[in-house]
Image (cartoon, rainbow, N blue to C red):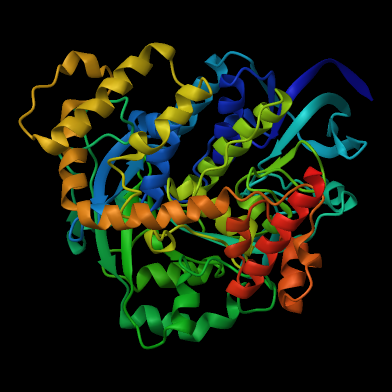
Length: 587
């Protein structure tokens, strides 16, 4: 065993989208940070679809950007196609989605990390997390090196005991041709954590030269377009097209004939996959009345002919994947360059976490991304940023940042995870947010950027610009022709200020009502459950409520109120006993 001669403030395990945001933000906060990843060549790899954003996901990316994260900035660097979703509905649910060049995205993010002060990147595999007196102490790697640390952020993605499925073929791996992490799960079990299994999948990739695109409907990029990051301006770019098609009756026949050959229905896979991104065979079984399903051909980059077929995820044997392709008009001669597959992996019940994403039973251990039961780059990035920031703040002796449900989709995501848990991979939708009119893409900075300045995550010289931007929005709400000094806004644009002011006015009545409701929620979240007070021991509450309170260990009355099954009378009794507890301990 080699003991490394320096102690790190924070060690981030995993170089995916959660790990990258965690490492970057921890280092930005001034913590000495080590990022350990199995391969430097797959940092920020887009393992599945080559896009960032989508319904509610685009809002999360804007929030990451507003908090000083990098996902939005990298997306604009790698963008090959922009599309604003839900424009047929109100602006509250407009969601940006951007197709990226996968390799440009990957290497641009790697370069961001390499340039970041306080951050060291290491190619190795973490195999064990050591604790001392109930707190994180060190990380052991596959090369038998011991790195001392004060906090760990685990962002393992689909790699914990990952298993790849293609038909009956089963291989170890977190991605096809990338090794699984087979040791770390045992370390987590030794720490008393509950491990479960989930699955996800991806479609085959095909050679675009073998596609008859005349049979598909082209979907050009938005142009002009709105950048994903507020710190970027539109530039002249050569955009690529996406294409839309559909499966056929022949596709349905192939699926019916070969369904049992899928790893999903052969008995090889027992874990649950994402409800809202099912495999094509899962669609056929669960929705037999729908014989035709939409397919989206998405380019993987500027310098490759590979196309990703969104809507065609599968774990069928490779020969069946060819039969499926042959059944679609325009894909009769398509060549598979990478087969579709499913991947099963370990995750940890997220109710073991505080809203800071720290493990309740191990001080200094934080989880982010798919280990918490989520799916999607954006959900992972949002968790990574919060976990990385809170790990650094813990080391520095500062209270964690807990985002509320009324101020961010990231807050909704984390509150759902730690309060309700998951029984399937969690995906964010606008419908999950009760205050979605307040949580728009246009106002993410107005909601969250003050936090970025508070914690030193954005350049200090931008602070005056942001104050000028906020004042401009307020002024434009009352006078759309108000004169604004554009130079005073710095990286924020006058067009963005006008747009936000216009939408604020449009939703004014709804917003006023939402703000009142949110205030009531905030008041409940301000009622802290005192140290030493056990709400599950309160006499008179339901037995089911006692059990759930003992499991979740809520930090506030507001969080307790969101535990499924707790009744208003339960909450009223808890509040009475909190007040009694405080009076007794104030003597």
